Image (cartoon, rainbow over all chains, first blue to last red):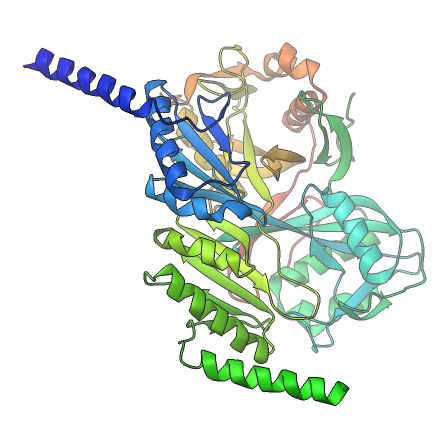
Length: 285
Length: 285
């Protein structure tokens, strides 16, 4: 019985193979993890796509492939539904494309997860008079509260934390700075849909002093005595802000070692920043 | 002429309003930033959705709304194409839904960006004999290379970095540990599609010593002399790994202050971890 069933099954497979041979396969690129990626580059009728996808899945399964990725540029949104009907799930989306994925192997699904964190920076910029650069924002949570806060912002795609801090200060206040170190960071969850948030408090040294505030986002900007900044009720009432402000003051008043940067080249030739306590460690090239 | 044209235009608006009044609006929730979110909860014909969306957009524009968000659970993939046809772009996707967005105001588009980083952890676990816990992986880049590396892994959705490091060590080696501090971190870009990567090297103290390696991902696990770990050609040839290994050794041999954690409550009542140099700073509650 077992033999018969096996032979019937392999006959079916052959028959099915013959039937599907007339349908073209989707063009795909293999990856190093036993998967394939289909990068759709031209418009297609959704029924034809559906047939080609079924055929291709059959073929990839025969080949022992594991993960199948489909990258659909937004102009081919008509192909989302047929892919979902074939059991694909969403992996991630950028403004201009949607990535779908399906695990077609019997082995455990080891598909990597989507990006999980947004990264923000706050800039502690202090001049020689012991004054710190602060702003009032035109929008958002602190609008109209008279709270003076550090310039903050979100790290852009492919932007380094140390670069983002310098950029935000320049954009919001017109002040040029150089990055010194990360003083502390905070991780919080479910802060943006299901995503988490990492916020790095950075110490920067000012290279210019005349404030030219940005009109659209910033209501006001000034140099403020560091103690006055830290003493604001807003900073005193909140454990997190209180401690972040105190770390900044500790840094300005006496010894506090944060993490500075070292620019390195990875095995694959990319340049990358390592952040570490360089008071306590002498790096080697 | 100008007056006439204005009056013609307002008549058209009125006429259009009368026509669209018969179409129901999509149900939506307002947000604090002048936007609305449509959370589609039941299946809909794509043509009907398209009509309702057009009508709703017209209404929201009249109301001065700015950002319009549409959350489409994957079972309603048939509604992706009509939303895109109305000018929506993708914002982000999770396995079970796609979020689309459109800015409908004349003001500058201030819609927040998608999550940009994946977060990984590496665990430096050293016992009293000066031996470090190392593994060889069954898959991925180091497969078959005989390189002994620190246990590493990706931080899960809503997981703290300090928790993730302890979890990965337990999963890969069976060793119980407690988190001590972040020794260093590295940021790299374009490491996963367009996304960046933050990798935190964490020092953990072992609470148990008998290794029970995980079968699926780990080829081998052992306690290894710290110097032997650092001396591996793999660590010596690569600037980044060499320095990360040396920071671990510096920590084990003498004074090196990384960032330890303090658990805090945010203004909105969420608990969060602040990471900072607690050798140099005394936190206050």
